View: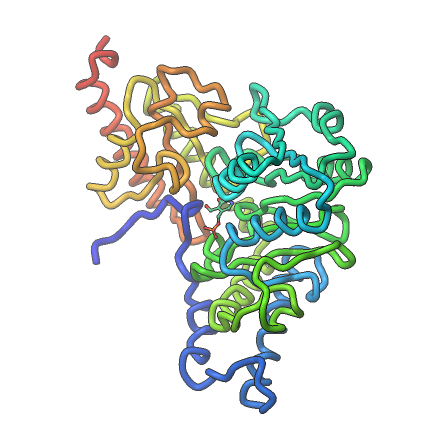
Length: 386
Ligand code: PLP
């Protein structure tokens, strides 16, 4: 296979070799059902508990506070639907306008069923107004769901402050931490979050495994009801191999945090500075806010993001125009819209997202091709000519 320069790690990541290795026995000799009474199955149940403990350790939680799910989307849905089921008299949800479709799609669906949803807007640096959040919570609010880090811009919201405000108001709080888990330190023993969503494939575990932190004592209704798996919190025979993989990935991430973050940030900043120097008319989105160390969202004036992605693809470089879910459509993503990127630049928005496997040579290669591609596209654009 030709060499791929993969700079789209917020869409999904490579399964780490150590994770792959750890999973292999569960495809072959360790195929027991963890619910079985015999030790062949029981040993697998024990291994799942080790994986759970590793995921818990990554976010400063207790193992029994971790529910394995099928993906980040399922974790998000479980948290919100659980709150609504537990608090049937409360018909109001608060979220932000820049959430992932996993939250926005569900909220839209719930609005059609009579729920009221408040979408907090972001300001010019990409942050929500914490006073507005405080004022918006009422006795009718069932749950506040605000993401930790944005998948498109990388902008990080002040999780601790948000959680404290919501808890002060006596409301349930969920955070979608799918993009921050394993990239930023998280400590549930210090941050008053009730629910936190994670997804394995964003941190070098396979696709199809998610995690939901549910704080001890939080009222909870499972999304899937049936057998007694996951301590009655999620029925269905376990995706054992993926759980083991997620556990291993969590262990690897915990071992390297925050060192890996510093390394990624230095590399990301070199990419950012290189683009600013080599290509004119570039805006860095979210530069005035804290950002995920691996993420760079840039908007190039007078070019189409889709053309950039396709020309980079010809060179074996993978990037994204926005979230993976909105690619394929020529609309400006909701996040770019909310960020207020000027119309001259909004269509030229590209997201680069790095991982522990990204090398300096790959950054150089991407910079070289970006400069050529932007020059070429601008030469063709009626707006780009000087
Ligand atoms: N939330 C955020 C912030 C994401 O970036 C994603 C995936 O891109 C999801 C939720 C959905 O996760 P999954 O793909 O595991 O369903």
